[in-house]
Image 1 (cartoon, rainbow, N blue to C red):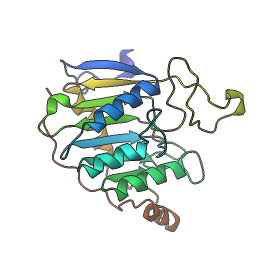
Image 2: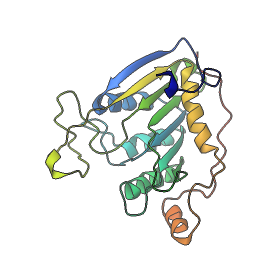
Image 3: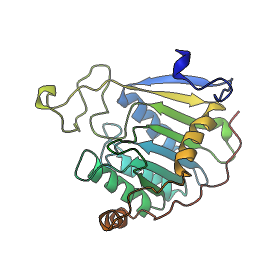
Length: 236
């Protein structure tokens, strides 16, 4: 097992953290609605995503992913997002472009990130909420659940009513079993380190050609990432 991790001298380590598993998308999404809905002006949201569907309802009655983020931005919450720039016409390209455009239009900043090896993809899913002047309320999520269709399932596994297109053998509402870890304490800052390292990477976000330049304009994506704000101290 130890061979899977960085050497101890390079491994970030903190104590005094609380980690709670949020099993199934329905439980995770409900927590996002609760926690993001409680943010106020000056707070900060950072997230990475492999696929994001702007119209995915996070609870049965909403809000959608886009509504949750748009409402936060309207309260002067800073929203930063890193989403995989899918290969043209494949998998998640249109969905991520759409969600990225919504984030950018509402005052946040979303980057479509193609800094991967040829044929690869970014598959990280993390979500960080930091509170200005209220660090004890900071929280991070890390795990396997995207903000997209098919993920809002529960222990009964009846599936998400908003199903992603999968093989017909999975049925009209394929079951989806996955989990996120909800983290509170100083380790939240280490999760944010992962986001920051990707954001600040000097490698170009994407290939430089006329087609990609047009795609970036459609998504309202800046040519160069804006510098992240000054870091706050880790939460207690």
